Image (cartoon, rainbow, N blue to C red; front, side):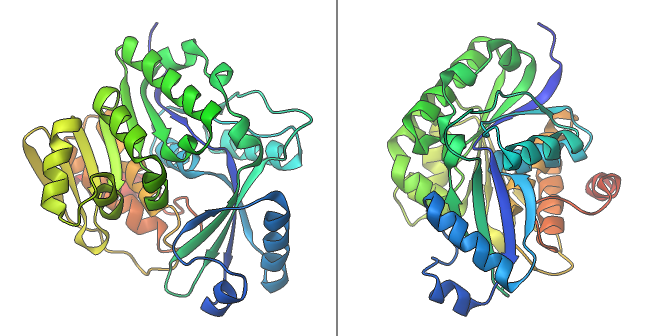
Length: 332
C-alpha cells in the first residue's frame, strides 16, 4: 500500500482545559506541582468549575500525541490521529478541533459509557504546568480500534507512553507497533512523563528494545528509565536499545543519538516563558516534521527546539506563530 500519511499519532484523546493559577491555588487544591495526576470524573468536574471561577480557561482538543500531531500538520506534513472520545459534546468538539487543524481523524466514538477525557492544566507564574487528568473514554481504546490499513498507510507512527496506564490500550499500543514493524514502517515513542516511566519501566524497556526506532524523552525520564542519576551512563545504555533517541534537557537544549553519533542541539531563544505546556510535544513535532521533509537529525532537532521555544511563549500547547517562519529560521 502506498503511504498516504507521513505521521500517524496514537494516544489518549483528551480535551485540554488550561488555566493560569497561583501557587497558592495548587496548595489549596492539593495539586502536585509539575506532575500529572490521574483523577476521577467528580474531581475533574470540581477542578473545571474552580478554573472557571478564577477566569476563562482555554479549551483545546489535546492529549500529548494529539498536540504533537497538530504541530506536525501545521508544519505542512500529512498527519492523522487515532484515539477514543465519547459520543458527547466534548467529544464532538475534540473531533472538530483536530479536523480544523488539518489532521485526519476517524476513530469511532464510545457510546453510552464514560465521558470524553479531559486534562485540567494549572499553569503557575513560573510557566510550570501541573496536570490533573480524567481519562474517561480514552482508556476504552482497545485493539479493535487499531485499523491495519491505517497503520500501513503511514510512514511513521508516533506512540504516546500514557497509553500504558490501561491494559486494553496497552495491547492496542503493542498491536499497532507490531503491524507497523511488519510493514516496514518507522515506530516512534514518547515516554510522556516521569511518573509514567516509574509505573511502566520494564514494559517500556521491552518495547524500546524490540519495536521502537525513534525514542523521545526528557532527561529526567531517561534517568528514571535506566535507574541512574548519571546522564552519560543512561546514554550508554540507551545506545544499546534504540536506533535514534531525542532527549531534551531544558535550558541545556537537547541531544539526538544516531548510532554512535551524538548531536548536541542548542536551545532556541523564547520571547518569554509563559506556559511550558506542550514544550516536549512540539519539540517532537518539529523533529518528526523535519525528518520526513529530509532534514538531517541535527537540523530536525533544531526545528524541534524552535517549535518548543515558540509554544512556551504563550498559553496553550500549539504554535501560534507563522509556521513558514519557523521552518525558514531552522534552515537559515
